[in-house]
Image 1 (cartoon, rainbow, N blue to C red):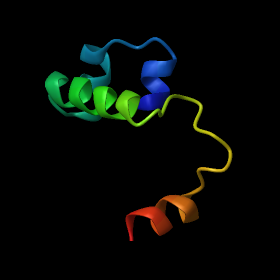
Image 2: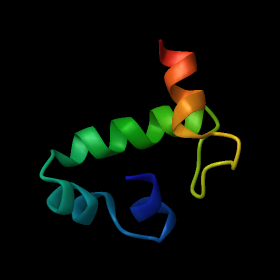
Image 3: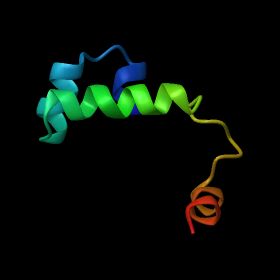
Image 4: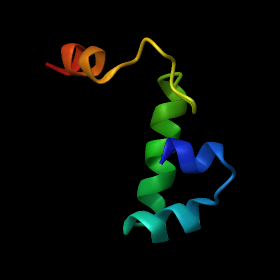
Length: 55
């Protein structure tokens, strides 16, 4: 979702691509922005780092 949005894809197109509601895309992109996340993700934000923070 972040990659698609970062590439300039509209929320509507992202929703169609991912098979979710446009409002879901918009909500998730707002949450990502509030968390300071954008595409590309920082190099230190690896899968292991995410798992450590969420676990």
